[in-house]
Amino acid sequence: MNRREHFEQDGFVSVLSFCDTDELQTIESELDRFIAERVPVLPPENIFYEDKADPSTLKQIQRMHEHDDFFCDFFEGKPQRLAEELLGEVVVGKNLQYFNKPPTFGEATPPHQDGFYFMLKPCRALTMWMALDMVDEENGCMRYVRNSHTRGMRSHGRTETLGFSQGITDFGQSADTCEEVACPVQPGDLLAHHALTIHRADVNSSANRHRRALGFIFYGKSAEENVVAHTAYQQQLTREMTAKGKI
Ligand SMILES: O=C(O)CCC(=O)C(=O)O
Image 1: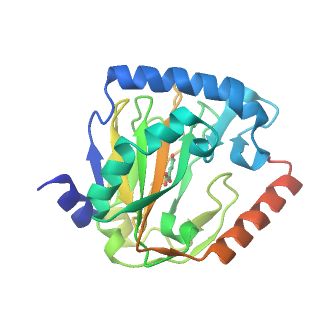
Image 2: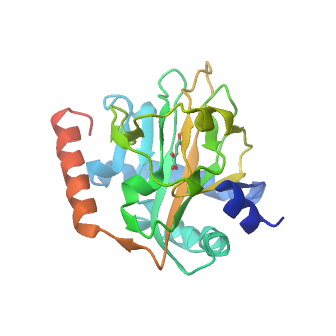
């Protein structure tokens, strides 16, 4: 089976060594530069900290490609080509994200389907998640429910998790637990999942290992976005997070 067939069958696929050591070294130094120079001047709704008063707890950066030439060029290169191969259509790049779960702070990622956040018709989109650190069960590897992308959208409700405001309300049915696959990865390995694939991750329970990754979101050209509802939801969320002092 090729990787598109794996993606279509399981709702996710892993691509080992998507970036080699040289590419990773370049990404690491560009990321250091981005965090030092860009993060301090970005709109606050693009940056989430576990503890706003402690910069070492940086948890997420949103839309990096809109703020930086290096990350824009990278996003539109290999990740976009892979997205087109897996979805089988022309894609539109929507978000390049940085994720971290710092040791002792890293919260669990609630079970969710990205399509619930995206608000697309049809729900033709995918997310890629490329590890920058070694990520295993101890520091919270990604977990996918195999084949869940064929069973439609589940009901979601608000969570208190910063950066993952919606979670599946009835997660834990037997198909969820029996079909869940833990995906440990090495730096440079990439996981791609369909926007309807249920996924989650545990807390980072390691003593001193970070759990960093880059996320790439692409919508298929055939997917129509409910821009009004999506923008209204994002604005509401930003207001709530500001009021709670989270951003
Ligand atoms: O990093 C994580 O724990 C979750 C990432 C995720 O859910 C996603 O990229 O869709």
